Amino acid sequence: MTREAMENKLVNYSAQDGIATIELHDPPANTYTYEMMRDLDDAILEARLDEDVHVIVIRGAGDKFFCAGANIKMLLSATPQFRYFFSLHGNETLMRMENTQKLIIAAINGHAVGGGLEVALACDVRIAKKGPGMLGLPEINLGLLPGMGGTQRLPRLIGKSRGLEMLATGRTISVEEAHDIGLVNHVFEEENFFEKVLEYATQFVPPAKASKAVGLIKRAVQTGLEVPQTEALALERELLQQLFESEDAHEGLDAYAKKRQAQFKGR
Image 1 (cartoon, rainbow, N blue to C red):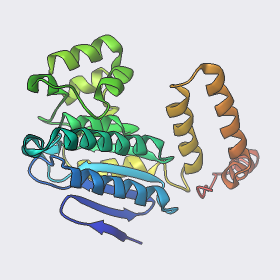
Image 2: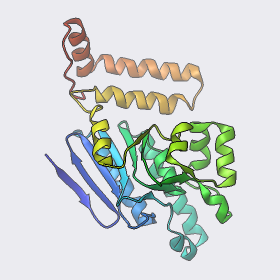
Image 3: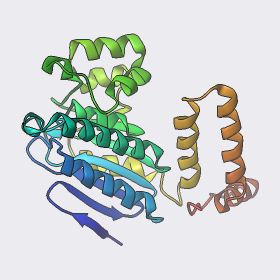
Image 4: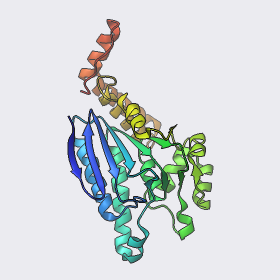
């Protein structure tokens, strides 16, 4: 069953077969404003609270841009106070993505630069479309630095030295180079790109996968990497105990013992 939870000018949301699709929609470049970021925030909350949604996919409208970052005209006309709280809200939205215990996949269907790449960095898996799309954080060319976590997430993902160089030069890179350095997980062919992303996402949806376990794995990684290892291991044990008490763990163990295919429910 398809359920349209929201559809408006800036963010389109739909959910079908366990996968929520969130589309940034402000052609041609899908630059974001405060209004778009609020819509994105609402969409993440909608998917988080929907028990029938197990995976979230974020894409850009059209076939040339995932997102080109913040709307420069909006920033030029804004007060310093507005710019600060605009950046703060963006940070809060991306942290909400990271704190959502469901796998979030960025379907990078074109250029992803500036804040657009920062949105993708806050996702758990990044899949880029083969083609001319470029990725980077060129804020230095505006006399600025990334304001939605780029200075923190990029070096954590590709290494401090390489990340710092990309930030300081503002260089944008091809999807192939992004794949080579671990910035994106996969590069899919242009033809039927989004259908292939959805096919990839399906593997994390019950009955194929225990989506509750996937969500708690995400929590263990996201939280564990930011605390001392002893605390991270304690968290891991607590999350494992939660899973031992789940329906899916009972099903998985029983299926293994009886040499049959497990049929998970995400519970």
